[in-house]
Image (cartoon, rainbow, N blue to C red; front, side, top):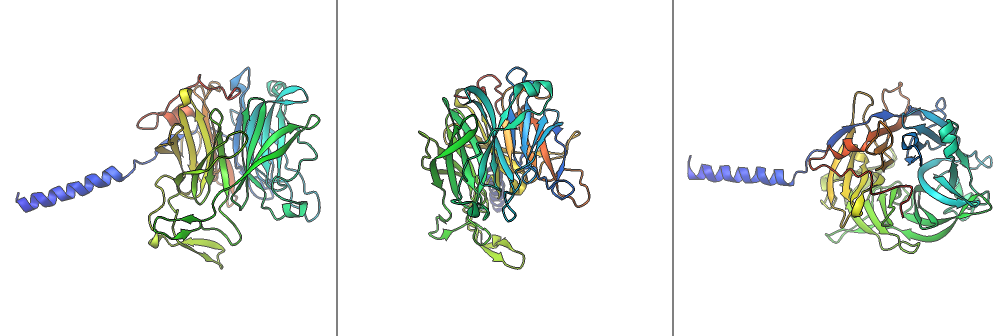
Length: 441
């Protein structure tokens, strides 16, 4: 072979080597073990649209734990770990003819809140329709007896989270995403605002045996961004809308909020003394910085991908959605975020600078179909019975199968944590002992 041919071959090999070094590995694929019944977003289905799940861990028999899932206009469903529906709670009706009805968006759990002198576990729900946080007491005795376990304990006088008046509530720039945490004997919820960049920190309080709340702090994330080339960019949005946050989770030990601003990326915000610290943009969506126009005929944004300046991230495709935290010992664990645009989930180290560790997808399996367009997720590290002895990941599925004609169907998928952990080339940690979600502090 000639010297020139060798040089050409070496150059070609260098290109291939460089490409392989910079091309991220394909996402791992896992399969769910259990799914909940499909719900349908039409009149016949009660306008049910699954969105966000939470897990309540039973204190005496973890295999009897329950899953609580929001259904937007249809309210809440409660499921067993076998996917069977145990209870349905309707969203509140509209308070007047021209008012918006209740619409449940996100849900999270607080353990041991002192209510009427008793330690009470709560399911907390963002009511987007009425701009409130709703509270439901979870009755362990009812769970054990197979009776409906949730009871509304929301104080009658709770005010809108963001709106200054009831008429402003009906404009629907209202409570959207929600994440809860405890700090010693105090309990808090972080709530995001629909079509706005605001986050509000609320402290729960006992109001005569019912749950109320008061505002502790407010944070406004950016709506526009300065790019490295000196230009300014704002994310694609319908007229009058700003880049909203929905998916959020709080590191229960470190009191760090992870918030997914859908068209921007994943933020990290420390929570100190019941207040927000300076936010840090941990990762950007791939579309970050891409110019766009608004198609008035189709009423949608059109990205100008041909002129993408290349300032976006590599791991999240808009929308960045559901966020959850896997807690392990010695500060280890993972932050998981839904990359809705490509039907994957990105995993980041819980420690240090939150290094990206890889991605995975929930694919079709023998018992369930895969997960697409996932909005919400939650992970629990402790054993939850025979089907989930190493913990559980629960994900919303925005396209449940098999389809029923043209009806829009959604549900929740339940995946053993060890299936996710072992799917990575360098397996993720499985730690069932170091963290107890019922005693996070």
